[in-house]
Image (tube, rainbow, N blue to C red; front, top):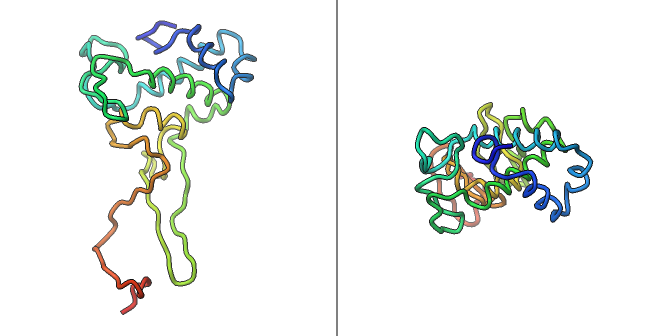
Length: 183
């Protein structure tokens, strides 16, 4: 592993971080050092294929996506010229997720397919971002999306649980007693 080339975190740092976690530490401990390195490199590669806000601090000569200029933390602090602490943490969590489910590395996203909820005559449709194949969801599992979301150029935020709606037609207003939209 070479920090800044194929990882954001050393193996020693990753081992310490995993040891502090409740979930995944047993699986990580069962891996040999080569398997751990491979998981970290695969997570790094997945993260590197994303588009991020700002620009690489070192320009085109910089191998990794981070550090970046023109970025803010999820709570609004300037993080230009740095690799935010959430980046190596996301890499480790993604490596653990890949160890638990290798299909994450080849999946185009995680999703819930709630399209419509209905109770009697009242109904609500939920919409979310779509992956490249048109599936609802994000590229990463929720715990990683929460760490990376505010840095991604897609505008996805770290508010995973919040509702998002995208326009699908003409706006209509309904009286409070007429939720079905019938005249």
